[in-house]
Image 1 (cartoon, rainbow, N blue to C red):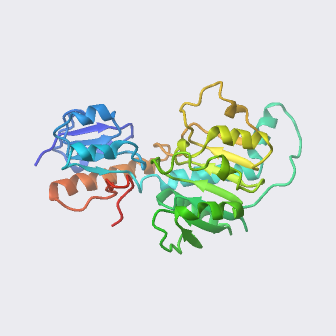
Image 2: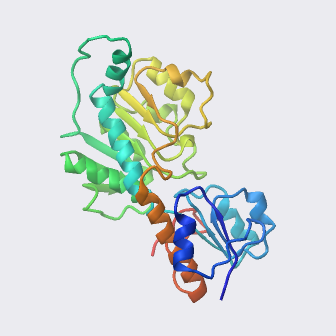
Image 3: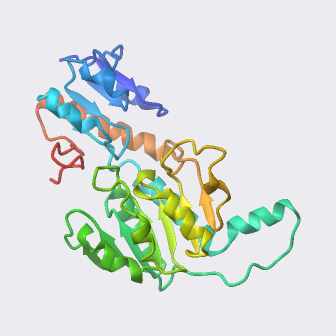
Length: 311
């Protein structure tokens, strides 16, 4: 059965992959009329689409899209968990090492031909790493840290043991107890009502003065005003942000000039590595076929939580 598909997604090679697997696919659909939409189009276009049966997001986070379950009872929404773990985790890991070894500061010195030793560096070996969001991305980052000798503690909604990625796994209710002992806090959480403002002023104050903070989940997780105050007071050894509350970050934002901070323009994910497009194509094609065969979906979103449903 031929279904109208809308590819509302800027990923190289996805159209070719869909046509190679489904030569008869009708790719003339729009978010307002297609049965299958691949991508993250505006909610307004989807709300009026009575034909919509599968929404395959190109993001691991789901935003407001689960709200569509209320008006589209036969809809399946699938996220892209499984597509970005490799690329985002590598970016997080590189950012952390950059801060620990002062590489960002040495790069600034190079621009002015300044030769100055910036002092002692830090190592991941022996560090206590707290990963908030031990899913696909957080788990990949945790494995990298463990490979270099770090002790990893994970936090996730369902705190089942995961010996491959973490030494210990706790629920979010243990966050306040775990923050004070962390040398590194790495965040890979989606945006939900429960995660917005999670790292507020009180929780930032729980961190060691020489701890590192890395966020590649969603910018809304961190109270940016409180973070700026924390850095200006001389606390935290370094902060790496690939996501901000407002993107692009306004040119007049004081965060640009905050001390000990490394900002990248939300580039950890996307299709910067070729395997991301391949992963998205694989997940999308699996779910298109699952829809036609009434088979289980991959990374189906749970309407009650907004997270990927557990098998």
